[in-house]
Amino acid sequence: MNAAAPLLEVRGLGAGYGQVSVLHDIDLTVGTGEAVVVLGANGAGKTTLLRAVSGLIGHTGEIRVDGQVVSNARPDQMLDRGLSLVPQGRGTLTALDVEDNLRVGGTALANRGEVDDEIDRWFGVFPRLAERRKQVAGTLSGGEQQMLAIARALMSRPRLLLCDEISLGLAPLIVQELFETLRTVSVESGTALLMVEQNAELALDIAARVYLLEVGEVASSGTAASFRENNNIRQAYLGY
Ligand SMILES: Nc1ncnc2c1ncn2[C@@H]1O[C@H](COP(=O)(O)OP(=O)(O)OP(=O)(O)O)[C@@H](O)[C@H]1O
Image (cartoon, rainbow, N blue to C red):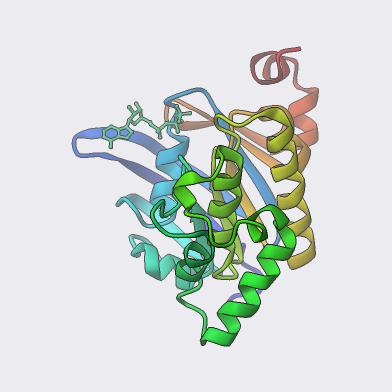
């Protein structure tokens, strides 16, 4: 591990689907424990970026973790490096109960005792899940399923949690609760966040830095504060 290197460093990344090229020459970094958000219109390539970084699709260019090149690694290899994805659409195992979903998330942990401790930890953070530990995930509310997807991704004790539009389709109060929980988890356990979000207002509250994607390219990047002060960005993404 190179202590001076960022946790995640993406250089000149390109990705797409078959003949369709979606991302072009993306440069992006996430420091240890840092919260970074990627904003962009529908179809800008935000999900594709998280898929490429987490190893779900191939890419050109370079991805480094702790300074080491891990380009085109598999998802399990990225997980071993400490990167864990909360996919868009919640991504719970709908036929399994809450507890078993968490168990699956903890398969990389050393033994059952550790898994049980970790489950207790996340039940403490998400009491609503604890109350429903034997409920089948498919019958949870949308907000509860999103909590479960986040808790499941956190079971592997990631150093970087990649979150794909966790606010999608959820009531504002639930979204606020989820963001506050994520902020607390990130600060208390030093987990870095790379979040793709449509809800720019909440995302800018939690993030230190922002990347703006437009048609598959980084159109601008900077601190969350500088984005709030930029009139064009404020009007386009915050609506005022
Ligand atoms: N499996 C796929 N096969 C072909 N094209 C795809 C596939 N998935 C996404 N795309 C295309 O890639 C482009 C970027 O999609 P992506 O989902 O990354 O955008 P996004 O910024 O996350 O959008 P949204 O905010 O609407 O979720 C879109 O034009 C989309 O149609």
